[in-house]
Length: 592
Image 1 (cartoon, rainbow, N blue to C red):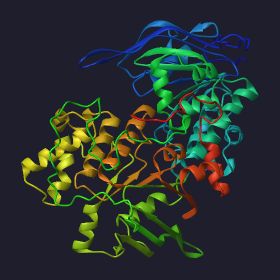
Image 2 (image 1 turned 45 degrees about the vertical axis):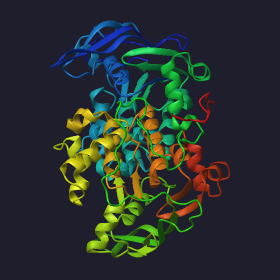
Image 3 (image 1 turned 60 degrees about the vertical axis):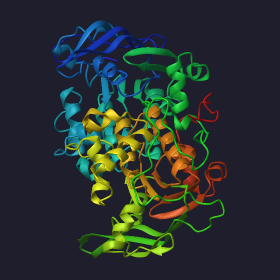
């Protein structure tokens, strides 16, 4: 496949399917920082063949995205390719001039970046952004580009392509924006598509649609796909070859089925054991229920944990307890929409939702974005007022609680947000973050609050030296541990966890889920766990409520829901869980 290029240079890259289209040998990339040079990629070898999907997996910082961006030299200014070759057809992309690279980027190699919110131009219509690619590469005239762009959007799987072409990015859903990015990447019919975490922020059903389309492109047109992901389940389902990276090195590579069936490297085995979609086991702590939870082995050595300084500490529930801690009865939440010519409109985001949650148990609300699960959580915490219905805490109606009664609810129910990067005040030290709820409720003096902060850090397996650090100095997993410690500061009866692990790598995700299970066993706290990921829910929940369009369509224990789903929507969610196509050796019972 060749096209005329602006500088006349022939960069034909067509190769037989049996030979690699892309061959990377000995690639090393480093970053210049104030503290010196940091090696991000070290001697990487990697092949991508026509018509195949090659997945590169690993945690944040493993070097997988740097490797992907080094192929077309779309690296930050402080990055440098120190050695190695990136052979694409007859050319070494590592040595091409910038002018020569422009004939390859977009035309021969398409890039699907991770975040469509950042990658799409917010002030240009979707159709214009696709048409621009066609014009730049001489594939359409200014007059024909608009119609050609609609055809490309349709090929990328965007519904009502002619309508979407006239819309701006903010008018599309996350899945639609991601498909618009795919349209930009495939507009010139490239031979190689580099997809860098293309579905990490999407619901599982939308994720499936996007991945189905990328796979279809590979099979239909012989396009090679380099899929960068931290999700081994996605890689297991979608790739023919798997490359596992850790700390800038390729630690294991080979046919996907072979690597997953018999992983040779300890890091690969840890990733498999950590991936929720690759295991069916429930995470259970190795401690007796409601026993004191010691520091994890990875944490610091501390003296015995002192008694909490709080006046409100929930007692573990007796085995015979039958009354629920939390009841939601027929909750409804309506939002007014902008008026139209037809008059006023309302959106019923939560529609007649009822459930109960007992002490020491976890109830998971699952569903796609827009299903009403997060709005339901906000109603429970009284962060929003219900249009109708009741919320009962320990049998007391708190639906309209104000003043002291509302303040007591705040004390007994806490929130862990989805994004640990945004939920912690960057101006505060970790010690100030954790003790803020204690100060707000005037619990203990300064010394007692500091002692409580140390105890909580011990419980979430962070060293006491973390108290003096700021959130920006911590990893995502460490920040989420701090957020959990903060939520536990007042010894609440209830913690609402809104997608608490969706932004984390699978191994960090596994650590946080294990931590939540340990803390529940040690304190008897109840969790209302919000998630779109049924694989995660299967490991942590005692009861599951599936929500769609504001309504609960199915409830039950996870073992029943996963093996005998009654509602078609539940079956659709289950079918979309990645990792089901390849059996994993990591299905044994998970413990710490």
